[in-house]
Image (tube, rainbow, N blue to C red; front, side):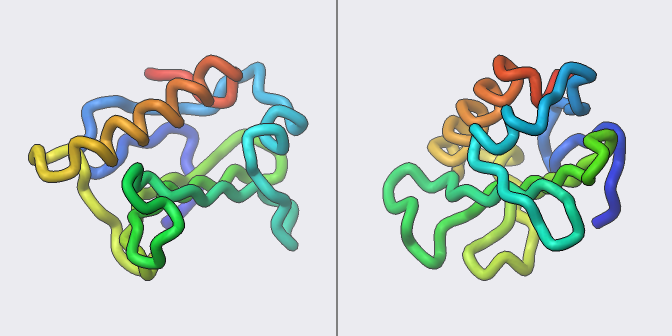
Amino acid sequence: MAFSKSLQLKGGDTKYELSPEIKKYTLLDLGFSNTKSGNFAYKKSIDPESPFSKNAMKLKITINSDMTEFKMAIVDGNEMNDVDIFSNDKHLEERDQFNFIMQNMILRKVFRRV
């Protein structure tokens, strides 16, 4: 997946873009880590029942080093396949967890809705 300025997850109806007020220290505060290439990476389970399970779905976000573009995906436990949590009611709890995480990032001015 390539970096982009705005993104809509598979099956989702909300489009996100990086906030112009984004700060490096806010990213580190929220649990992003620096990669070898200078990007910021975030990987967090969205399974509220067993967040430490190896099979839990994860939210993966990578923001480039100059904080102008990003990529985001919800992946399965082995992190190989994108998962659509929006198309049916099978993943309601994961959808709520995703929305909670994204709302926090919006409040902290990392993302904004388009």
